[in-house]
Image (cartoon, rainbow, N blue to C red; front, side):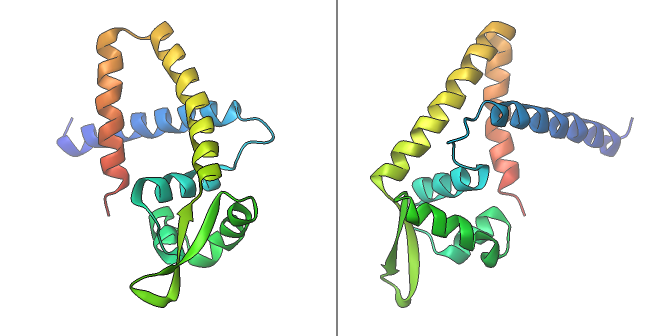
Length: 145
C-alpha cells in the first residue's frame, strides 16, 4: 500500500470511530440537555474568553446567520451575555456566564464520566494512553485549515 492509501484507510477508521463515539455520547443526553451546537459555543467561549459572533461562526465553520438562534437562546437562558468589544464599540463579544459555565461543566462531567467508565471496562491502560494521545491529535486536526 502507498503512503496515500495508508493515510486514506486510517482516515476512514478515524472518521467512523469519531462518528460512532459522537453518536453514543449524544445518545445519553436528556431532553433538557443543551444542543451540540450550544455546548460547542459555550466551550469555545469558555476556552478562548469573549468572542465575537463572527469569530464563533468561524470556529464552528458556519455562516454567522446560522448562529443567530443559538446565540439568542443561550443569552435568553442566561448562559451567555453580550458585552461591548473594548477594541471596537460597534461590535459585541459573547461571554459565558456563571450559569453557562455550570451548565457546560455539568454536561461535560456526565459525558466524561460515562466515557471514563467505558474506557476502564473495555480498554487496557496502554490503549487508554493511546486514546489520550489520539484525542490531542484530533483536536489539532480539527483546527487545521
